[in-house]
Length: 389
Image 1: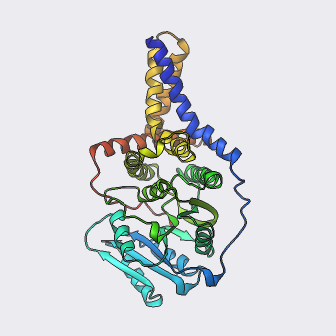
Image 2: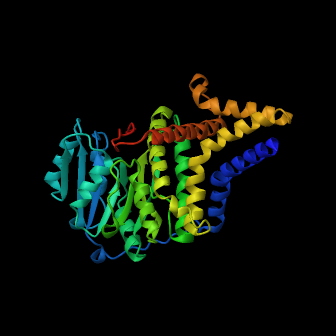
Image 3: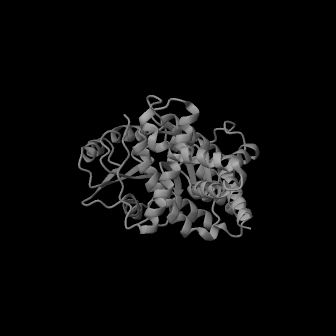
C-alpha cells in the first residue's frame, strides 16, 4: 500500500510539473491564434481619451530620463498625456531629473513620500488623485515605443476591456549571466498570455511593467501585497471583466544578468504570488471554467512546482528500496537541485545546462518566497533590481 502511494505521489508530481511547463503552453500554442498575425487597429487621434500614466520610483536616476523621453516621444497626443510619479523617498538624482522635465512638460506631477512607503501604497495614493478615465500603470525602467500608448489605449477602448497588458520585451546589451534565459522565459509567457487573451478574453496576470486599465475598475490594493499587478488583474477577472493582451503594444525592459539579483526579485514576487493565491482561491471553483483552468494551469501549478520537485525526490528515495531505477533517478534529482548552488564554481556555458540551472533557481526562489509568506508580510517596500544601462 505504501509503495502504491509513493508511485502515485511521484506520478502526480511529475504530471503537475509537465502540465504547467509543457502541456499547457503546448495547448495554448495549438489552440491560440498565431502570435504575429495581429492587425494594427487604432482609434483616430480625436477619439483617444486623456490618460494618466502612473508609477512609483525609488533611486531610478539611471533610467528615469529615458523613461520620460519615451513617454513624451509617443505619437499619442501630448496634450492628453498626464504623468503622476511617486518618489519613494529617493536619495539620488531621481527627483531632480523629474523636476527638470516638469519645466518642459507641466503635465508631470511629482509627489515625494518622505519615508519609504512601498509601491502599492504609492500607487494607491496617486490613483486616488486621478480623474482621467484611463490609467497607464508602468514601471520606471520600462521604455515605451512611439506607438505603445496609442495601441494600448485603442485596444482597451475598442474591445470594451477592463485591462489590456502590453507586450514587454526583455532586452540586454549581451547574453551574459541569465539574460538569455530570462528573455526566452518572457517570450514564452507573452505567447501564453496572448493565447489566453484570444481564447477566453482573459489573461492570468498582466505584467505590471505596462498595462492600461479603466479608472472606474481600479480598486486600491491591500498595502501589504507584494504583487499589485496580479491582484488588480484577478480582481477584474473575479468580476467577469475582460482582461486582454496586446502583442502590438510593445515596450522594452532591461533584463538582469546576475542570478543573485534575479533570485531576490523572484523571492519578492513569489511572496506576493502566495498572497494572491490565498486571496483569490475561490476562482479555482468550479474547476472547469476557462478562468479556473487557466489560473490553475498557468499559475497555481507553477507556484507549487518546488513542492512537486521535493515530493518527486522523496518518493524516489522511498521507491529505490524496491526499484533500482529509482535509485539513479533519486541521485539525478539531487544533483539537479544542487546545481544553482554550485554553478558559480564551474561557470558552465552549456546552453541546456544553463536553462536547467535557471529552472531550479526559480523554484528555490519560489520556495523561499513561500516561507516568507508564511512568516507574514507587513509592507510592500522594495529595492529596484540592478539597472543594466
